[in-house]
Length: 170
Image 1 (spheres, one colour):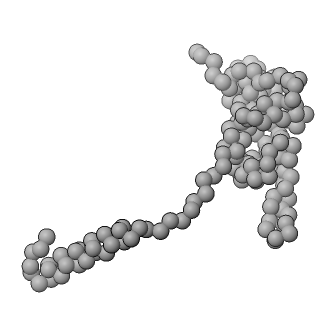
Image 2: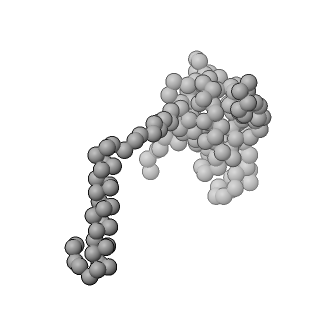
Image 3: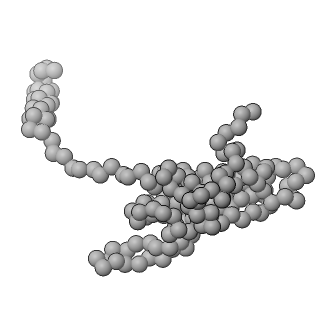
């Protein structure tokens, strides 16, 4: 069996500048709060003794991200986003502030692999949130495409009128 990227040990928390969680994003180790509990599922004799389930909680405001990326992150996290308060800005639009993201993993039998899995899930969320959505600019049909559409409609109408009279045009 080959080792996948989830089985690799997470970066050491004493890494200078924090823990890398996404391309170009480092978070202070203190911002990532891990807790461990007994996991459900397979585990043999260890299942009732060892706390292998990992839960990661990170405050969204502790992440060094622009406000627009944070807003997308809150939206993408869905039910994994906890807390947060709605505030209105000076223009009257409502924004969510605060809150944290909670990610849990208990697929693996070792605590370190579940911890790495939580970090991978956070990384995937951050990469998705950092992708700037493409702005749709409405376009108008060209004059030629409008003329072709009308010509096709007229031809179709002539075919149908011909059927009513008993002529066969098409």
